[in-house]
Image 1: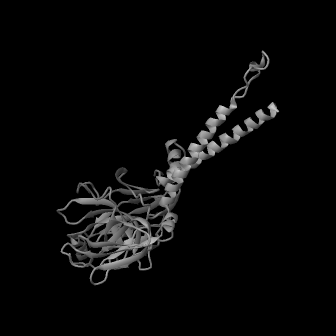
Image 2: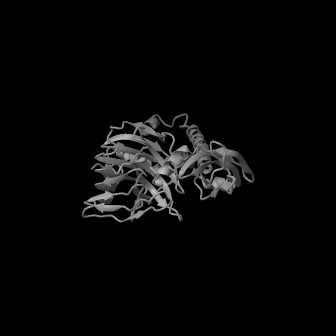
Image 3: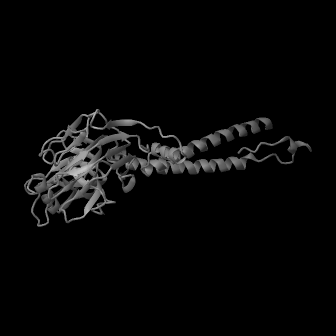
Length: 251
Length: 151
């Protein structure tokens, strides 16, 4: 009788420990979810922190020479009034107030890298350009998604940079961090490289390898979408090379 | 974790007291109860963040009048963030949106492609009246001039 009791007790102990482990896992997953953190993001961060191999993949690449991408131009009351995007002398050239989404790639987490950027045809107001991500167009050809942007409203006004989201073609500055002023001579209008890293609900912009801005969207409005480039109303943009890769991958 | 008796404990015959496993089991069940309670709390928090909670809480409405700095009605478009709901103002700046999930919502008042966020708490079965919603328009008008090639 006693032997049977001991055996039953030991068996229950193992079950209890299994239940405890299962509950710990469940509580961790639910706690992360309640804080708006994806388990996949945590896993990726842990792998990265441990120096694990990040599986690098190039989702999209064009040097506008041999490889010319196809794109969808955004034409509505806000964009596309001053001409079309074109590839000229191995470079992507935008019109003033132009916006396009790369055709054929849509994803969730990625690094967008633009090389050899040059602002051109600058008029007296609203110079600047932007990088769109997790973006799509609605039935009225209006943008939904995110954007990182440099902007100078007037030559004598400061240059600002900011992350924004677009809903139904309406742009809302993400605040925090809001608009940040950068020095006019920082090279914003002619950077060798501009990278926007999109991972989970955190977005990081880097210029010439140096991090310049970070934003988080607690609402996690858009979880996937296309990549694109835009020019402001007062200038066009010239780009040498555009690549979309796995986040965390070095060149 | 399990403390099983070893042969050493029996070298002088049967011990007077057998190892007490009930205390260990009691602690295990307390841990299970605490973890289950935590799982319940976080589960409810997750539910509150999801659309499922909104469906349980019901839907309501929101209405208001969009005006500029001088009080003039604006032709604006209003979006309920995170939903497909939107509405345009009429000539008097009035808008009304029904079917808004109950709870804390964010409206985006869009005018000339620039938006202003307005947080709003919507109660199920009720229409929340925001009254006059004032939107600054100087930057939008300035940008419109550039977009239309005026500068």
